[in-house]
Image (cartoon, rainbow, N blue to C red):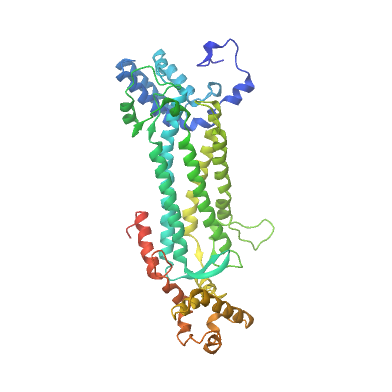
Length: 461
């Protein structure tokens, strides 16, 4: 049996069940690139501090390069009995470089080592996630540009409310995802702090130039407090919180699309490549991809709550409970990657039913507010106008007519201020055009918003 790195204090070996229970290699092995990078930087820092010679540094660096090559090519043998990725790499380094490899861990701990690895990994994940969001935004912007003349019903309480442009609806998600990208940028800024040199909890006892070490690893600053450095998992929690919000936004978009794909709505059709059939009903075309995007928000929420719950009440500093941050974190990373890989091509392949949307936009008294606004422009107080139009709508319902189908004579029963130009104000096109304020759904306003969205996603077209 291989000797533990911490075994000198113990007479007996670990119980096999306990050894399996406490090991983290099954999930922290994905951090090997970051562990190698951090170890190389630490070897250079030890040499600068005079703790090891330049020759020893070079031997260690050469050994780490060989370990990295084995990991890259799949030749590395992972040994679960060595508990974690740190010890697996260190033990292989000693086998390749000889006893000098045992000097690498001088002045550091697995506590600051894992804190470093996580921040290095997070840096890469944040960049990849932001790019995935940008790709999704880009497709939404393109689909919005194709839909500048497509009217559809806007909804509140899932009831038809007022006409909007499909482009306006799609751009709403572009701006949601932009906030997500901003949140990830904020997370990256706060995570840009190097914990290495905090050692187990009290700081390293060797004269390491931590500022130089931070520059070597590409960090903006070093941790100000060694206790905080090894016990902090805010960066993980912030990412998980951001991931949960991204999941919520993607779930809402998927929810819209699955609803629109129903026969009752008939606004959109999914491409065959992003739908499935039924094992019993031959006619079915199910929007499974969108439904799973919607469903995976639950995992993202759960992972955030899991890590928050793990960290709640932990005394300073490091506790093995904190090992439980990785599986939820990595699951959220993988879940987001899956969502942001499948969402862009799914969105690009949608077929929008423009005629059906336009017809629905003018049904169910969608321009009633425009009639109230018409009366307001005749100097009727809005509350009085609202009451008048409510009675008009009730009459239209009882007459089984839409507002536009009511005659001028019928409308004037409710207010003598209504004149022949009223029907121009009640059209879907007039309703849209009237809302030409910043952020509104008028075609001109949506074109301005589209130009802003293109700038956000870096598309100058």
